[in-house]
Length: 233
Image (cartoon, rainbow, N blue to C red; front, side, top):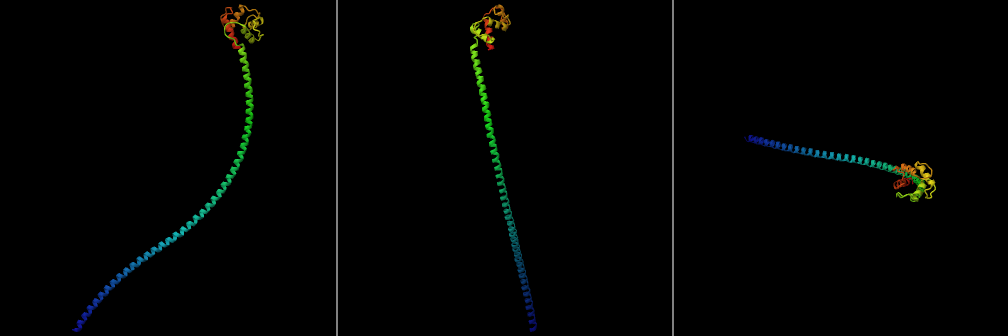
């Protein structure tokens, strides 16, 4: 009986031990699972950090390559710029020299042309001056002659009318209406040139002048003759 009781207690203890062992095993499994999850998390973090480090290293490498290329390109560009600058400066010097030569040639040509033009202008001016002086002399002479022979249209046949008539008809200018002057007038107006002034001569003059033909050498006929004389001066 005592033995049976001990076995019961032993079974109970065994069951409790198994339950405890199962509990410990479950706790251990949970602990292991937690540790494995933590390890996986740590591993994932480590992998991420490694990947980041790898990316950083790659970026640094690529950056260094790019910087090297940029530096090389900058050097090439500077060299090209220096060559271009030298070429431009050389060309500019050539152009400047050519321009200066052309400018000098143009200056000489302009100065030569200016001298020629000045000479031509001076010659033309001299010729023009002579022409003006000659014309002025002619005008002066004409004015003098006109003032000397121009008649006042007063209808009175006096010495000046006779002298102006003689001047126009080209006979001796003595202011005397003599036979020679009368003959010259008669020839001009279409009368018989006999040197004797009569009504027929007056009528011929009136017809010549386009005035009333009455054979009387009155004021109107004389005025018409004086007007004709002034027009012929």
